[in-house]
Image (cartoon, rainbow, N blue to C red; front, side, top):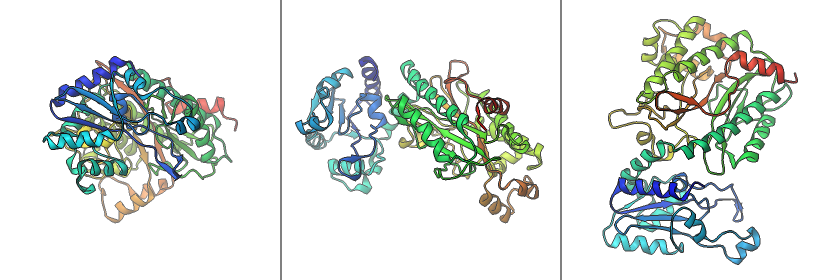
Amino acid sequence: MFSEEEYKTRRKKLKESLGEGLILFLGNDECSINSKDNTYPYRQDSSFIYFFGLQIPGLNALIDLEEDKEIIFGDNLTIDDVVFMGPIESLEEQAHKVGVTSVRPSENLASYIENSIGKGRHIHYLPPYRPEHILKLSDLFNFSATAVPKKVSVEFIKAVVKLRSIKSNAEIKEVEKAVNTTVQMQYKAMEMAAPGMTELDLFGAIQNIAVANGNNTSFPPIVTIDGQILHNHFRGNLLKKGDMVLCDCGAENFSGYAGDLTRTFPINKTFSVRQKEIYDIVYKSYQAAVNMLKPKQQFIDVHLRACKEIVVGLIELGLMKGDPDKAVESGAHTLFFQCGLGHMMGLDVHDMENLGEQYVGYTTDLKQSKDFGFKSLRFGKALEEGMVFTVEPGIYFIPELIELRKSENKYMEFINYDKLEEYKSFGGIRLEDDFLITSSANRLLGAKLPTTSSEIEDFRTSKSSI
């Protein structure tokens, strides 16, 4: 939790952005796994954390702009709750720490909303991403569940994006804590990987580090020898000599802030010649992108520069041909790099993704592409000082995609499909770090990890038991 002044300042800026009506914040409730009292690990809504700081189930909040009221709706523990969970500070005491002096019972929210609707007042709410949020909003406003997403407040979305996009010094410290825990997770995976282990062995070890140093992981870690599957959550494969492990993981602090790093490393102490060649192309793409990160730089152009570097490297290997710029313009690079270069990071590992990428990462003048290989680029607009960003280029050899494009006679002027046959079982490589956009350029967040192929080999040689 930050200082009282930090939360009060955030709410003040939000009120100035909207001007009229009521601003409704839905906190998250606990969610049962297989019985009422056996629940999933609790996670508060990120915007609720940002403006109100309290990570307690069952809370909602209102900011009444005309009446200048800030109200938290929730209930104190019953004696039954205390028996099973122990005593905690009253809700009033906790609210006071974030500068809110008005606390009302949960049941009062519905009547407050009903009275406001009766007066013809506008009520702002954000896009719901949980089914229970949709049902709650449907009940509060007395309209169908299907109507709920259609009535979200675009003004509210834009105001939240504007505020949450730029991280305060206090936030940057929290992000960097999460990144440093993630660095430890990556080191552990690189240190212990050996033939005969399973992917799950590595997963369990890095998950333990996240839990021991914070709240949990910021997303389910991707730990796989099948790196060509971009979000691979199967963890049953046996590690074998000659394989590579792609480890994409992140820690989340108790404060809710996230880290997100990826390294790809060999099970052997060194990469094979072919693995090293592909890794080095990914690294050059990463380096080219990082060198461009600065305020006012359009991120779509950073993405395209990284794509071109991948094409240049693959031409040198004989897998691609022709003019690199024209290859990228045609989309030929998407045979190997199918996803976006990076995303903002903060209270969400993909920061504010639930608010809509068209608001978070694009503008009225810059629309998100719907084309394959570009539709997953979550951010394209200009960078600003105070943003926290990932850079994560990769090269992925996906046999099914290669066969499809070949059958379509697509990109024939840019792809050497015959040569590509030799790489169809290669897998995939991704490299990812987290950066803060500074006043003139950028700063790598967190402690240094082995990044080049040589640094990774040096670490594996010195630490690996194989």
